[in-house]
Length: 575
Image 1 (cartoon, one colour):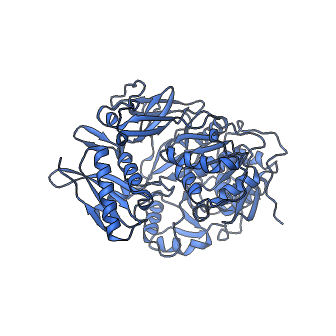
Image 2 (cartoon, rainbow, N blue to C red):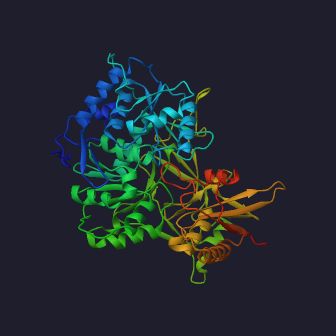
Image 3 (cartoon, rainbow, N blue to C red):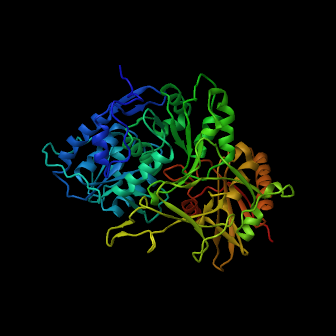
């Protein structure tokens, strides 16, 4: 009978004394904690103690070094499995750089995934790609006309001969992560030993994770929030982790909650949509979520409605709303940038979105503010320990409270840069070490509030329109019939701009669809005061990133290419 690793350990808790991941695993392996992998129904399928992880990683690394040169890149299709964990750390001990790559959304023929996989592998210049047996054939098809060899993620294709280990040092790199929103030019973000260990320590301090704590996660290991926050950071703190993969979570989100309840997990993270679908699909049962004291939210804009719904549904099962910890992060900063204060829940700022669009000021909504111009935003705290954050205008001048500007971040967690095969690593920071995150936000009583991505802003007649305003309005007006939408702007040959809203629609009856079109169109027009063409598209046709976020850029490109099945539309009105 399999027995999960315990919460309590036999060695002294230590998170601050490691310069490399291999050093951290060397120490974690002296204890009895580790990783636990569960099925979609919550049955324990595999236990991988940190002791076994280190032993298997070192054995695999000794074989890996016989056919690789130091610093070469090896692609790892990052399924949530013991094999991925072992191979990732084998790379650390062998001195080769792992490149975690996403798993396909569905099995079988997947042309988009194969094309994406090929582009990433060729851009990175991989020595080889290792894939789990379940999608080995798909990976081989994707790279059939390249020189990149495809092997099994379990290491069975590696030579039996061994060579000496060459673990990374404190000044070396650690991994390359390709951004989940990559299009025709995938962007490889470098993680160094210094940036990763620094960020892991900041996560531990910021979330007060310590001896006896336990992590539960469904986040994919090819995304920074899963890879760093729910795999590497817990290992550096010698904490046990319980995993279900993201496909299992999508099928049965209650399993995530079941593991928290049964194993007394204290920390777990999810984007807002994870909390939302968990609440919507809960059918009742026995749960005790009272051990869960840090319920982190990250990976996308934090949504008040999702958190409130979750807290309301699970309050009777011991969940406390004060456990919510909204946060902000991005891969260019390893993952974590800011956490809201612990044990306080989430702070909501309801602002007048019409004023924000026209004047770049996030002023509180008053009693006289029309409902369509009220927008609820969530505070995401201050910079992680040992780091700095500021908000500036386009000229680089710091702005006052409630003035929207560009978010800049500085500290040792910032990535060394972007991998370029010809020019090496291209820095992401200015001469003073500041990273322009590409996000916009403002200060409220010392806490950061995110308003959106700078590149997603729609400029219309001198006003800034946030696509989220359009999308949230559409989804609210459409209710359960409009689960997702995407707003963006295009220009025609004459330079005239047009704003489009693609709305996934579940309704099938013509009369119902026409009514939805009319309702959604009227609401979004009232909200933003600009001409918008609303188009209904089939469900699951908008493009999502590997981390589950909407990719407006790729959805926009798909629309330009004429690849959408356009079911019905309401044209833009003339101003």
